[in-house]
Length: 231
Length: 80
Image (cartoon, rainbow over all chains, first blue to last red; front, top):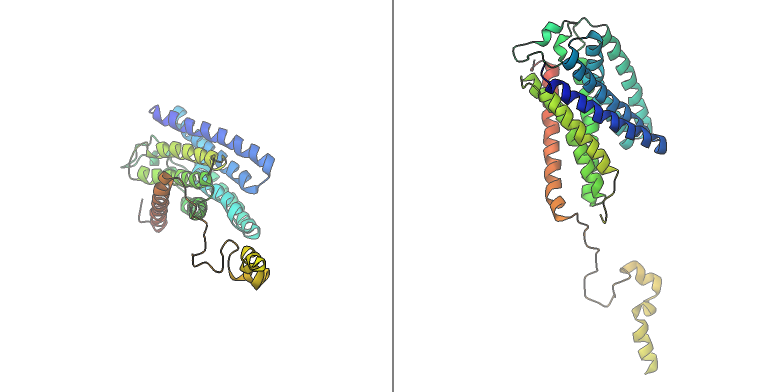
């Protein structure tokens, strides 16, 4: 296992856990449900990175793989996006979607933790097996959950950030929030592209994109919550 | 003569009625003036942001479309 497959994911995890502490502290002061959900989403992001780093350092472990697949591949984008839904949508719609997401997450957890695994399947014609991959899941139907959650997460998180940036830009107000939302949207998109490149056989693309995504999300949040002088 | 000067100093608001004239034109524009009403200048971000923010927004919108196409491709089994 290359050192890059240990250092990159552990760095992502560290950034995410620091970020999550800031989000939870802000939640304790302001009490917005979006902050709580973003905090949970970022913890999922960090756990995913930790599992990847663990695999890089110590090798295969079924529990670590299941945890990675559940929080890192299935849930993270959707829970982050749900935070944005609470920020932008009416509360009754947000609550209804939250119930669906919670039930869906519970179902996904059951499916992932009862799925049959075969780590040898992670090595394919385009994959060296040095990175974690959903190919290890043998049970049919489990992996089809992932795009559904990620579709919801992409539309709500990236779409919500883009929409917010557009509104601020159109009115030419709160420049820090315009920039912050653009960075958040870009940071949320990067792991999706990394996953795509990883599928195509670009080794390391997933972990690099996850690290850059974590950095951009963190900087975007800091930028969006720190007003700029005179603008 | 003094009365005429007083009317000129007070202006046409006095003659047409304060409330009526207020509904017709903005307060800072004389109804006798042929100048166009003053509008507040459009707010602007600093030039560098004015240039790059729309580009970033368009790029992100395109990226979302690409990601959605890939996700649908995975769902439909077009990608491994």
